[in-house]
Image 1: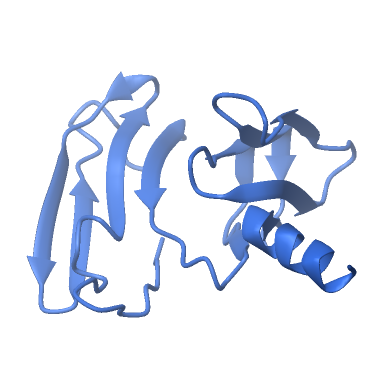
Image 2: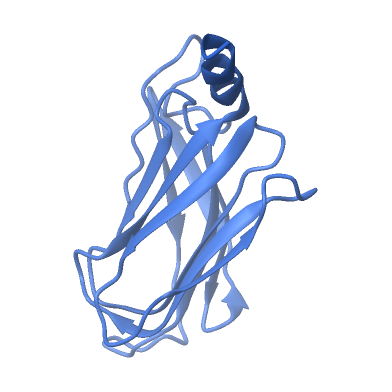
Length: 158
């Protein structure tokens, strides 16, 4: 996976505050993460381990934390290869988001499951899950509206 981060002030793509790989599991077993950095970038690597045979299917799960610029209002996740039991979850507490919308375009014979905890909840989040296989070129888009934008529109209507 590649993550682009446009530099802002002292933050650039090499900053741990901009992107962090938090955890990786292979077949449910936690794997150590190695981080290396370079000017304006960073690389995370994880060994599959000796117990994984070449060509054998494994279940890969990972969690990352990313700083998304507020002016973007969109987070777009694409699937580049066939994926089994896809889940994407976005937590957005304490960042001024008033409303979160989800657009899914996960091709397959059934509808994805969407579960939400509203922005008014102590830990608001939205999760999109698709059991079974999805095809490449599918994905999920999260789109949000900020609290301050709602106030600005309401002020203009007075």
